[in-house]
Length: 119
Image (cartoon, rainbow, N blue to C red; front, side, top):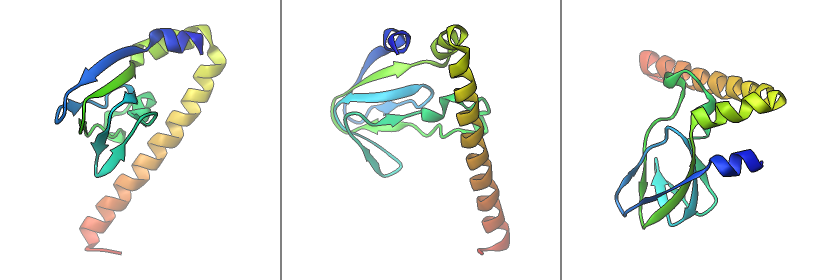
């Protein structure tokens, strides 16, 4: 936990500024929105950063509605932390597999629905 907190970096966004979802992003102050969902203090975006296949990730950026302060954890920092804690790597790999499987199912269902014109 200490290693993660030390790896976090702070970033600020102005209203209407795009917030990339490439990293784990935790809203510390302010209000944002993503895909019609309001994001407030303590909420996260980019949780799927642990998924390696980009097509299975939600890379749609969020938008700052007010001034927003976030804490970011980058993938390479997480990888460095996992080198010291191999049991954490196993947990993250399992979570990544679940996220990727869910994304693949949603993608297949969407394709099926588009090709067949509905259920």
